[in-house]
Image (tube, rainbow, N blue to C red):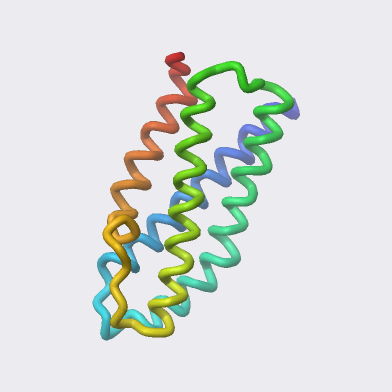
Length: 136
């Protein structure tokens, strides 16, 4: 029973985190410079409280599941963990660029940060496939 509760909390945290990262990616890449200031101020508060909190939940619940129930024996889990580390780093870059862009709305982030939306979507699809299919 506890396993299913932890798994549900992990998946719920995943949804909230990925949603927040997609919002960040949209604002960073598609909101025009003249209106960025106010939008970024609102998004940064949401990012600090909700998205970063969900990221903490993803790591806490995921590590509890990995150490307590699954173990680190499957190659699928290693690949999934590598992708989650990459997404966590991207979230850190998004947060840093939102902070910089709030101070100077005319700044444009590097291409990797601007391409956050497809990176997050493709990574999420790969993670879901790995977790369900467990191919190796």
